[in-house]
Image (tube, rainbow, N blue to C red; front, side, top):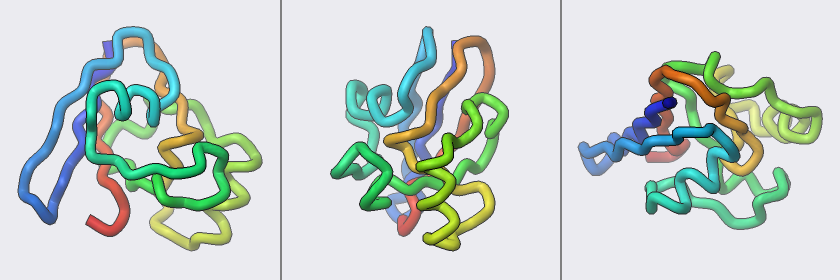
Length: 101
């Protein structure tokens, strides 16, 4: 079962989520009230941009639409859009940090 840690550096806290069967990262965060902001859910606003601090291998590779927006944003190489990122099922630790915190 993937464990997801959302690191909130500005608040100095973190939140740990469990994702037993994987799935859309934003849905997992939303269901468990994790502090990842989002708006459109369609890879057009970048509100949900995150930095993957650890465990990038637990995410499916970005689809073309997500990659196109990430290229425009010029964020860290480890950034993803939570609305588009899919968590693979299986064990592991994924640490993410919302961009801008």
